[in-house]
Image (cartoon, rainbow, N blue to C red):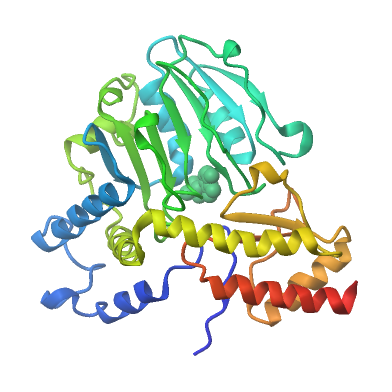
Length: 360
Ligand SMILES: *Cc1c(COP(=O)(O)O)cnc(C)c1O
């Protein structure tokens, strides 16, 4: 068996011990005589899985007790509608910072439900930085203030959170959840599609402050009302059972590794190896302003489209897959989420050095 190093932005690599555990437990989960995919979500045994998954997530993220944790479906993209339906219930206005495609999509969707204002944007330089904010331009009566904490496509991350006062801060953390410590108490709502850093596709994690639940508009579909899922502990209907189970295994692995704090150390080390090489290379260079570099998604180019293509092709043949950059940026992008081992990044850099020697 030969496994590749998968640098995909998502779905992405899962830790090998997690896949092995899932394989071992596939036919007979803990003596139940069935796989987790087959069992009733109302069974005691599945209840123990979802309960443990929530407990572990609360522990590793230090989630305060006045926050609810929800395991939903519909991907991060459904949250683009669910958030305004549930939160845009006072002034009917919200502030956004446009730092990439995902923030743009969230802004467009929320604009269908209320008045959205882009208080800042980095579109002028293809989203290669996080814009400086002027808090005097923030709407004091906004129902929420929206950011995308790590910009998966462009490879930037926020280094400092906006000061929004009493206005709840909402953040898309799809591509940075569990990558480094985050003070949950600074946010009104956090959400993440699982398929980047926490499990397989099909699961969306929402962390919401209690007081923000229960004010959805009357027209809100039952399934899009946070209250529905809070009332039923994410089991109003059939939850994404298998994805929740894998998420639980990922959290177990993470805790064994030393938690989010230790993960952050490893992630900084991995990112440094790649960025240091990009900064010293005569062929490759990073596309993002240094200050805002993401720990998770690293876009880079040679400056020559043909050479970029050649690199992606040869890298794939050598077992480094999905390095092609997003179509709006071009070049390459290496997504180095929690499950990417340090060795994967070291080997990639060695391969890049070799390619540079042959092509510079
Ligand atoms: C991938 C991604 C999304 C979209 O997630 P889906 O689960 O496919 O809807 C949204 N926001 C960010 C930051 C992402 O990386």
